[in-house]
Image 1 (cartoon, rainbow, N blue to C red):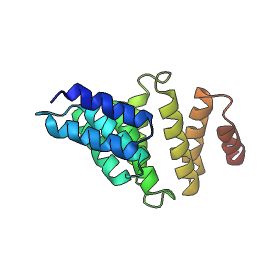
Image 2: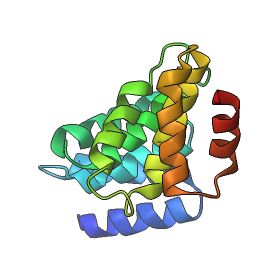
Image 3: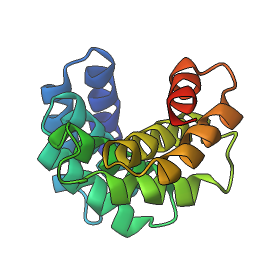
Image 4: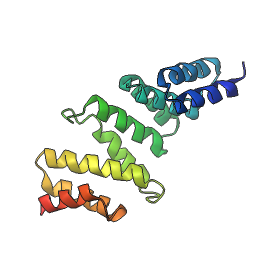
Amino acid sequence: PNLDLYIIKGKFQFKQKDYAGAATTFQGAIGQRKTPNGNDYYWLGRALYYNKQYIDADSAFSKLVSMYPESIQGHFWRARSNAALDPESKAAAAKPFYEATVEKGQADPEKNKAMLIEAYKYLGAYYYQNKKPAESKPYWQKVKELDPKDEEAANALKVLQ
């Protein structure tokens, strides 16, 4: 089978917001390959994530991280998947993955700006929620550095003064 066609079809389904169909297509591509690649798991994970299959999405992104541990993408999407599974941050499920996003993203803050801002906001909110304002504040300051017009960060910093 022509695996490029699977990927083209899967991306088309994804663009059409047919996330369940895209996930099935990407799973088919992975099943056909002798050695699936990181791109396969990236697209599978995103399709599963947007289809609200967060546990399966996390598994796909976990494979991506094991293949490319230095890449920010797998860590970021694992963070998002775990944040969706733990929306109140009771288990801090997303925390280690947002921390890894920060660690990987600092190599090129401008390129990784959106992912870093999301990670900093999560971590800032996490520490605030856990009554650790001194640990929360630096994350909100980093958001302001990357986006001086960010109102959420401005409000958080006012509260933390």
